[in-house]
Image (cartoon, rainbow, N blue to C red; front, side, top):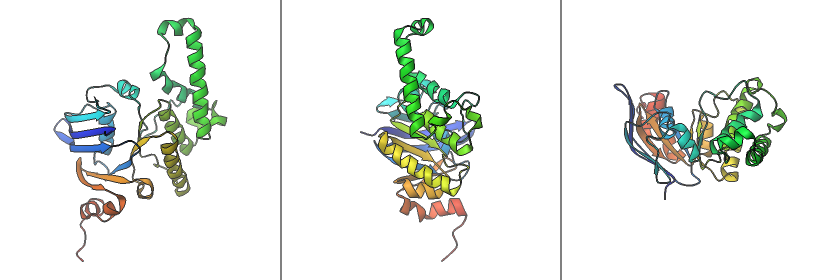
Length: 256
C-alpha cells in the first residue's frame, strides 16, 4: 500500500491555477524529487500536503487518511515533517529549544500535570530534552545547544531545521530546497546526510531542489512541474533527456 497518494489535486489562487491535475504515489523508503522552473508550483504542492493550503479539488491521503481539510498541526501529528525554502527557525531561541518545541506536538501529559509539574510532566520533559540532545549530536550540533539559533552559520541553520523536522518522528519528510545557499562542498555533505537519515530513520523523502547535482545524485524518481502541470516523471536518466523538460529549463530545443 502506498504511504502517500495524491489524486487529481488542483489548487487555485483566485483565478490563477497554481497546480492542476497533480498525481503522486510514494511508497515506504522512496526518495523522490519534484523539480521545475521558478513558479512551477513545487512549494504549493508541499503546502497542500502539509495543510498550509487546502486543495480546491482532488484528494491527498497519507496511510489511508485524507489530509485535505486538516490543519498543519493535525498533519504533523500524523508524522509528516517538513523544512522550508526560507529557513523558519525560532531565531531568538536556543538551538536546543528549537528542537524541544517540535516534540510538544506529541506530549503525553495533561495541561494540569504540566501546570503543577507533576511526575509524568517531569519524566516527559526529560525524555524530550534527552531526545533533542540526541538529534543535535547526530547533526553535530550538540556543542551549540545553548547558542541562539540566529547566530548559527547558514549551513548549520539548515541542519538544525532538518533536526527539528525529525523531532516529530516522521515517516514522511518533505525537504524544500535544502541545498539553497550552499557551496559545492556543503552540497556533497548534504547529499550524504540525506541518504544517511533516510536509512537511519527509515524515512520516505520527497524534496524540492534546484541543485541538479543533488537531485540526480540521490533521487530514484523525479517529477517535473511547469506552470502547475506535470511535464514528466521517471528515473533521473530519462528526465535528463526528456524533450519537454529540456525545453522548460532551456527554451526551444535546437534542430539536430
